[in-house]
Length: 341
Figure 1 (cartoon, rainbow, N blue to C red):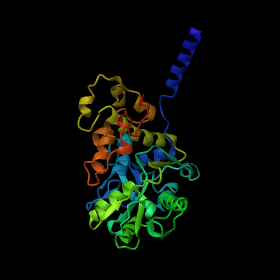
Figure 2: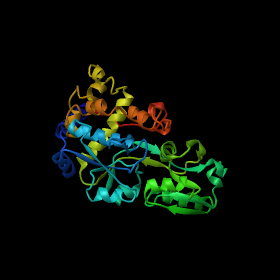
Figure 3: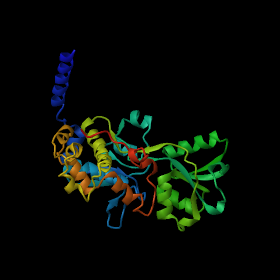
Figure 4: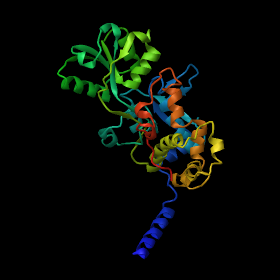
């Protein structure tokens, strides 16, 4: 019996050697030949993806694009950002206009299958909520019967809204507007009683767009699961792997206490997991088809997941969103990365 197990171990070790190097696919080849990653982002959601007056993009979604660029090129800035509306985003990805979509997009079965996409992880666990003007006197979503509701078409938000009101035997009048800037403007101008979208978007809108933020409240009900994550086209497994593991690397780095500030010092760590993650012990880069310093480059230039969360949407940002479900699994949250080994 022992011989049998030893033989099985030898075969497994051999397979590791065979599978040691990834093979580039057409999408990754195109990105490398171009020397730039083209990333589809939102048209402007504070904390997730927005451009300043100099055209510099920042946000938690933008950091996913930067991490992928750092993994492929060793440089987080080799990214072209293409703003897309909720309705345009999937066509932009299907047509090849963008290589990657990192655009507050909910991971669902039909999007992952029928649209020909691969979701590569969840960079923000969210849920749909409702925002109203305090003067409406509403304290709960259950009090919204007959309300007019501003919503974007072509979103899970629109579908969840109809489901929620139907389930609770309430009626509503939708005000459907494609561009998010126009939705916000309509809500703050009083064209609708309620604005509904992912709770993160409500906090962002209130902080960045409300004439007087204190006049608006976000109701307590969260009516859906909205796991938001990066998306690629079917057909290039290696590119999908790089996008997937770039996000996992940020989460794994936070778990091991590796930050943009201490990553150089961490290169001296004797912890075998940290040595593998940072490429001091080689092998992980080769398996992914990138430089062995890929995680070092991501953390040095972009930061770990916690750093990205904090500066874009968390305590270090105007949004001040609590980590909640987006805390690490070791802290009671849902963020959990498979091991880099």
